[in-house]
Every structure is written in C-alpha cells, then in structure tokens.
Length: 100
Image 1 (tube, rainbow, N blue to C red):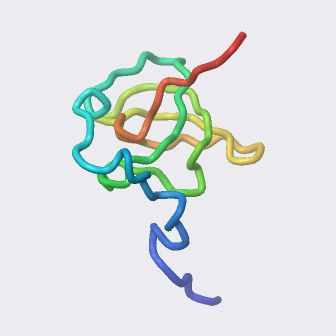
Image 2 (image 1 turned 120 degrees about the horizontal axis):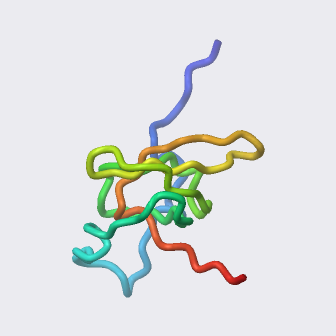
Image 3 (image 1 turned 180 degrees about the vertical axis):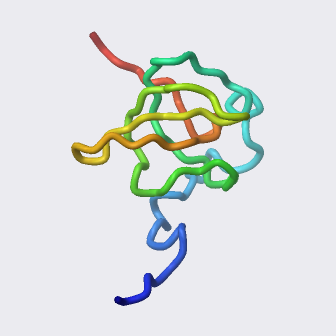
C-alpha cells in the first residue's frame, strides 16, 4: 500500500489564509466564547492558532455542539451521509446565522 504524502495542512494555502485586513492579534472574545449544547456552529479556522484545529476537509461545514471536553467543544458534523464527532477549540467556531 502506498504511503500518504504530506501532512495535516497540505494543499490548504488558500483555505487557511487570512485576508490582509484581519491579520495581527487574535480577538480574546473569540478565544473565550462559549456555546450551549445543541447550538449550531460554523467551522471557520483561525490559521494563527493550530491548537484544537479540525481537519481542513471540514472547513465551512455547519455542525451541532454536543458537549464540552476540556477547553474544547465536541461538534457533530455530517461528512457526506456519515455523522462524525470532532473536538474543536472555540476559536475555530462561529455562531451560525440561520434564517427561519
């Protein structure tokens, strides 16, 4: 079987790049934000912080918070039809703006 070539951030140059206006210090409010269980969140990576980052394939997906694990949150997302549970730091999460 062939070996996998590359690491975690392979082929993510544009996906994990901040715009020129948002570079610099990260917001402490985003770092310490809290979420309730069953709340919808958007996975949006903060490239300056690698700790608690999800796999880049899930970038831009919407998930549901299932619980907390240490400083991070357990988020359930759907990868095609299969539900997956990932552990994500709150700096990589945004509250989802859903319209009813």
